[in-house]
Amino acid sequence: MPATLHRPSRTALRRLAGVLRRGGLVAVPTETVYGLAANALDADACAGIFAAKERPPEDPLIVHVATVTAAAAVAELNPAARALARAFWPGPLTLVLPKKAVVPAIVTAGLDSVAVRVPRHPVFRDLLRQCGLPLAAPSANPFGYVSPTLPEHVQRGLGDRIEHILDGGPCEVGLESTIVDVRNPARPCVLRPGAISAEQIAEVLGVPVSVRRARVLPGSRRRGGRTARAQRAPGLLARHYSPGTRLRLVSRIEPADALAAGRRVAYLFLARPADPRLAALGGRVAWLSEAGDPAEAGRNVYARLRTLDEGGYREIIAERVPSEPAFAALADRLGRAAARGR
Image 1 (cartoon, rainbow, N blue to C red):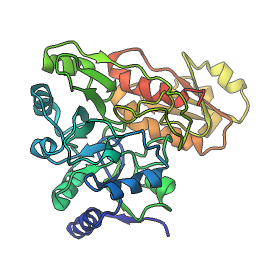
Image 2: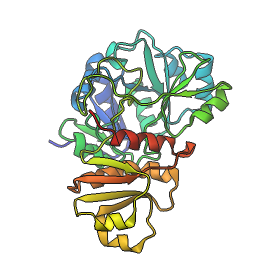
Image 3: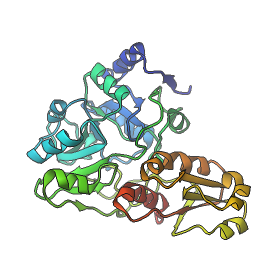
Image 4: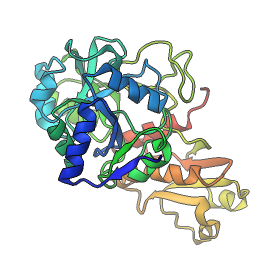
């Protein structure tokens, strides 16, 4: 049976909180992407996440909590973490910190650190308060595929593997959270870019913030594969968030080339293309934003990739985004989606 879609009523939230307390799975809305949630303190429940997603055990989970106090129950919060929490929580920022013993090894890929955040989405926050638990929640999609930003995306990807989806509408941000490693407050490092930039983090902490580059881990593969060793945080594989259709990035899409290409090639522009001739290509042409706004493009990128991926094309050709801080997260996701060799 397909998963049941629940509107966010008081009755539904109470019911789903009970599901989570009993060790079940619930797909939940966040401001970033939809997540697949389970009790983060229940190793068996979290094993259900890995099974449903076909996720390799070396890829850890982010623990979501309702308050800073709840975060301190699962992680050792140092002064840098507390400063970032004051500045950006609730919000799309995940902190990597030393874990407390209460967190099962399956959540952290056996490492001594845990990724934790306080989400902003009001429906998810209500659910966290109802169940009174920290919830592990990676993206609610088959491992490695394009992340879901609508409940329908979850239904199409995992609807036959899970029982419950909580409908919180479209995701406001549309890209996964920024992940920053602050285990050493003197040397913070952004492991995954997101809506909160390295520059914003540096301004709060008053120290330089490095940014880790994506890399392929030996032995990894595109979906459901094993990595050679545990990752410090999720979403660090060089190829990730990727459609089934081959995605190729180019500096600029030339209208003449698009018009001359065969019907099995689709095009993804950053902004609505100005050339009126491209209208003749119909659904083979899509864009992320009317005028190239980075926030709007981030909200739309996964939905656009999904639509093109379902179009039966041989290849999707997408424009690279500007090399500016405002586009860093979007550039990261498109680069991982287009990476090859896994």
